[in-house]
Structures are given as C-alpha cells and as structure tokens.
Length: 455
Ligand code: HEM
Image (cartoon, rainbow, N blue to C red; front, side, top):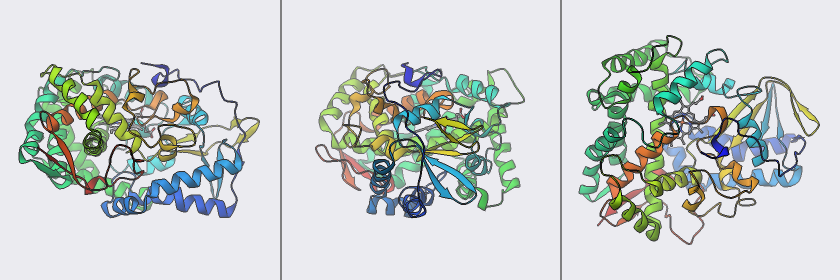
C-alpha cells in the first residue's frame, strides 16, 4: 500500500498552510443551500429515492462544487468557518487540509462526531465509527482482522465468487435489468456472504435495518426505537452464532471473543455499508457500458482470471472510479477534541470539520481528470498516482486511522459481481442519465433510474 492509505499518512509538504476564514451570514446561507442541505435531504444513512432523482435532474453536486469553489476563490483554501448559531462548523476546502484532518485522528480529529453518533446509534450504538476513545482501538482492530484490510483476496473469496455467480447470473440471462431487479438480488448476495445461506431470503431483516436507517437519517430529530434496535441486534447475534461456513459470520466466529467489541453492532454497520457497495456496482456498469475500450480490456482480464477466486485489478479500478465520480459517502466529518491551529489561527475544540466528497473528488480547478473516467489513476497499488498534492483528496474509502476496513473486501466483491453480470457479453446502458466517453460525466447520477441490457 502506498502512503496514502497508511496510518502514518502525513499531509503533503508541498503546499504551505493557509489560515482560517469566516463566512458571512449570506455566504453561510448560500453554502448551506447549495452544498449542505442537498446532502442531508438526500439521506445520509439511507437514500431517499425522490431526492436522489431531484439531485440528478438539477445536478445538485455540480452546484455544490461551484459554490464551494467560489468561496475558496474569495477566502483562500484554509478551513472556512460558517456562521451557524450554537455550533462551530468548518468546511475543508483543500486537499492539504483534508489530508491533515484525516491523518490526525482520532485525536485531535475524532471520527465519532456528534452528528454521526446521533445518526448511527439508531441501529449500531456500539459501532466502531462512533465509539469513544477507550473502546475504539479494540473494535477497530477487530474490524480490520475480520474484514482483512489490505488483503486483496479475503479468506472467504471463493465463497463470495460462488454466491455472486449464483445470485446475479440470472439478471444477465434475462438480458435486461434495472435497479428494481438488481437491488433484491444484491441484498441476497449481501445476506449470504455476511450471515450465511440461512439468511438468503431474510428480507424481514433487511427491512428492519431499513426502518432503523430511515430513522437514522433524522439523527437527533427522531427518538431511538429501542425495541426494534434490540431486535435487529438479537437477530444478527443468532446468525453470528450459527457461523455458517463460507460466510463472514464464520470468519468472525474464529476470532478471539472480546465482550467489548459487541459483534452484532459491527455487523449492523457492515450490512448498512454493503448497500453503498451495491450502488457503486450499479453505477460502475454505466462506466463499462459507456467506455467500450475499457470494457474490452476488462473482458480479457475476466477471461484470464482464476475462476475460483479471481483477482481483477481493472474491475477494482472501475469500482474505485465509480465511487470517486459518484461518492456514496457524501461527506466525511471529523470533530476536534482540542483547539487546533491553522497557519497561526486557532479553531476551537468541538468544531465539526466537513470534507464534502463532491468537491474533493470533482474539483476541476485542481484535478485534470475530475470529470472523466480515469481508471489509470488507481493503477499504482489502488492509490491515486502522481505526486500532485491535489490527489490527496481522492479518498472515497477515506484515509488515515478510520479509513474503511471493508475496502479490499468491497473491491473484490463488487469486481466479481461486475464480472458475473458482463462476462462474455456486450453491455449497453438502457435507461437513466447517459454516461458516455468523450463527454464530461454528470456529477449527480440517479442510480435508481439506470438500466442495462446485454447482447
Ligand atoms: C462502496 C462501498 C463503501 C465505501 C465507499 C465505504 C467508505 C467508507 C468511508 C468513507 C468510511 C469513513 C467514514 C468516516 O470517516 O466517517 C468508512 C468507514 C467504515 N467502513 Fe466502509 N465503505 C464501503 C463499504 C463498506 C463495507 C461493505 C463494510 C463492511 C463489510 C465497511 C466497513 C466500514 C467500517 C467498519 C467503517 C468504520 C471504520 C472506523 O471507524 O474505523 N464499509 N467506509
């Protein structure tokens, strides 16, 4: 792995720090309207389809990028403090500062911000991402071991490939599929690979999680449904105890027991996060359909691969491009646990720093490939190539000590899913906003409107 994904990641020394600025009331309102409100409205924890449609129709991510860039031109690229009554909120506007905030954690920049705690406690009160400092190390280490971070082929890789083939090849055989057909098949893959075959048809479990995620969208504004949450965690525990061979539950059962980890809470996070992986896969199909030369290279990669546990670097890069171009984590938040200093100016403890993924990944003032499909960016060991400081901002799986521990398993699983859906066929986009070579790619893409056909 390159330095970008190391725990010891340091912000690049090539650009000098810039001081903090403060937005006025009107500018705060403008930025809230253009960048923050559309993100919240779309649903941070569970997407709301009508709002996803609206974001696509109005290209809201494009508006967000332009508003943030305008503020950066006005103030410089140091953190921008907004005027929010009773809160200290700072927008991160440079790759340099994003690098710092992500690298220097969990102190002074904690991933367990109050917004995330309020949202995620609805279904995973002891999840690693919202854990207090004393509980975090054990849960983080457990997640890294169970998910096998930095291991391209997870111990369950062969089983994952088999499950993906069994559940998804029917879509290809049907010749055409849309989101309505893909999503239930994807959830069957997720339940089987996480909990075992016994969970294959347990749609009630996914529905229960969905209801709690929908409450989580409202964070502080909705009461916790304690009984429903306890029921979810209880049902997850039953599957974990059964430890069906070939599932992640079996991997988990083989780990040393530690009562402080609270396994069901960690698995509730996994199930929630697999939803993002499905969305990323579905959008990656649009990239393949719209870039025939790349699709041809992928086809020969799939032909040559080991059928039992295929290693598919071009498909990994395709999924990485999917989450770079259309990030599934709309913003990465950190909360400062002490005063922090920025080129001589001090920002008080308790400030929430917001890295908006749309700006970080689509900053066309800094990134030459911001709006193009550029799988070659990930050729260097899956980290963006080149030495430009601006590339530090391209971190769809985050960076530093809270980076996504599921990253390698996600890239493997989604790569295998794409190979099942496309192998031996020519793929075309049949519906949804066009994603085509030679045009600037849309900044908001409604995945629920996409459909594909193979011939
Ligand atoms: C497209 C799919 C995914 C993307 C883009 C993604 C991205 C991310 C990002 C950006 C974070 C950091 C969040 C933050 O700092 O607030 C994160 C954290 C995390 N992800 Fe993922 N993730 C994905 C799927 C998964 C899956 C499928 C799993 C588990 C099977 C997983 C497990 C986790 C865990 C446990 C954390 C918390 C890490 C910590 O607090 O140290 N993710 N992910």
